[in-house]
Amino acid sequence: MAGNSFGQLFRITTFGESHGAAIGVIIDGCPPMIEVDEAFIQAELDKRKPGQSRITTQRKESDEFQILSGVFEGKTTGTPLTLLIPNEDQRSKDYDHNKDSFRPSHADYTYQRKYGIRDHRGGGRSSARETAARVAAGAIAKLYLKQHGIEIFAHVSGVGTMEAPDLQITDFGTLTDIRESNLVRCADPELAEQMTTYIDGIRKAGDTVGGRVACIVKGCPVGLGEPVFDKLHADLGKAMLSINAVHGFEYGSGFAGSEMRGSEHNDLFTEEAGEVKTITNFSGGVQGGISNGMDIHFKVAFKPVATIMTSQPTIDKTGNKTEIQGKGRHDPCVVPRAVAIVEAMAALVIADHYLRNKVYQ
Image (tube, rainbow, N blue to C red):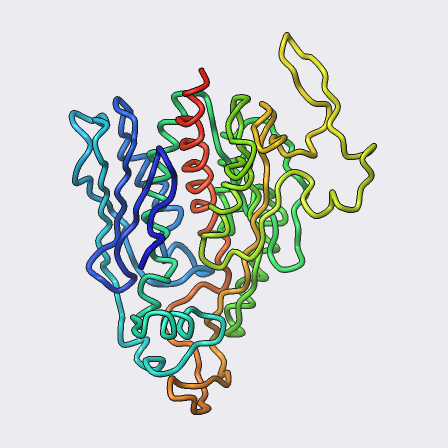
């Protein structure tokens, strides 16, 4: 199976399965002398880990990580950095019922046809459990970016048909406090309560619902991204679309921009304190595939979780009709835990392009 690596200079390779002994990540190209704040890395993993609240899966994983290589006396050495996260709470028997059947909208059928074999225990490599390794790597990328004044913030901006207004940026610290004060991780406290109640009702009905995560990158310098195939927004799009259950990505004005006129949509230049800025930011901080120094902002759309607790018709691997119903522990809505994954993938992209841009400096 190819496609387990991401990035060019700041390059990660993840490994492991949902019900295997462990998952983990190797970071190749990590710069030396980054202070490795283990408490920060664990806090990032805690935002993604299962069993956080009544509106997330009840699988219990501490997601406590181990650093196997690449760190000496609390700092990165520039050699490959390896982080391992043991699996602790596998219940493989919960998946025995779909050993020979294909779950609707899962990777079961496509994996079986492509490889001739599949790990039916939680989806194996296709499980969102793999994203914990990305969050661990993203935490290292965040620590590197912080040295250069770059910060990333994401929150749940929508669940079902509910949508929060665009954030009024004050400082990320205040927004983070608001986000972490509610179960759904929305920076709009009033809407967060409504979202939580709605998701809880969906859970009790045995169903699932989709949602959106909005992300902002502050402090990104001008010049990140290449103008043809490696456009910054293209790499961000690939990163986000590689996350389990993601069905959409838009940056700047997104799809709404297609309804506007050029005279409305153009970001006019101005100068503030000797720096070039734009009056509006419909470009989302990226022009011509290259960062322009404005805040980078984008949204990621997640589909409803495919495992539902009601019976559905399907077929088995011999083509016979059968019925299947979800069992075990699953998220009724993935977006509260996906916030950490979106931030991590954004950090990996920005860190990689930051290093690539050094050749021009």
